[in-house]
Image 1 (cartoon, rainbow, N blue to C red):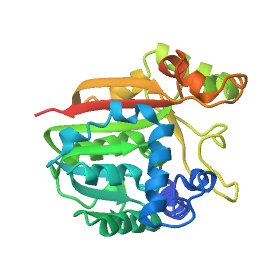
Image 2: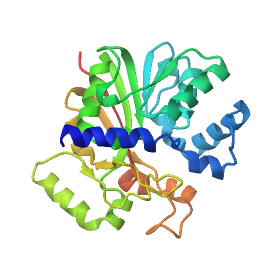
Image 3: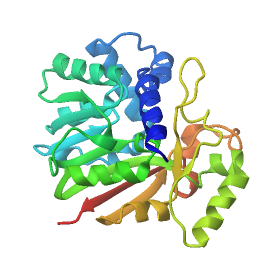
Length: 276
């Protein structure tokens, strides 16, 4: 990718993500303002919809730790981190998520700050944080490898990276993009690694106007492990499923309790530790 390509992606992301990630869910849940009551209702629905999130973010263990969240959306994770006593900093490429999280912090009386910036050129010194939490954003940067490397730079030795990216071998990819998924598998069997981009991404991220996210990438556990070669104690698992083809006959609750999310789920959650 040329610098011009990356600059274009960055500019498009800064515009696209001004519509807060989670806005469609907010409409479904009847959240129409940013009052404390409305945001609490949003957060309760969010954490119920993603019940496995607590298996990956050790809220209590982050109390008193310097935590950077990358990609802020509606701010549920930010709120939970601040409530847990983390020394919170937020980073997002778009202005509106930053404004939402700062509004949440002020409204709740929590310290911390969210700033606008790009994880690919993060405006923080080396070793500034004890933990980086990046749920559902690094796969939109246009360069997952550079984004992970930037997270490593920001972590102090022994610091933890907690992330989620889209899984390359999910049931949705196998159903909607069988040829591309097979080519990716063959590439991996040949010993190559890396992410695969785009494809039919409307089911993943689009705004109210129907426009797709400027860049969306997918990665396997094997390739993600290779991208995290500068870390130790790498652990990864897939989660999440929707009621959609080829799983339309089952409810989401039923699907979440089935083996599907743990084998070919939509999202790939992982943790790893920066080496000393």
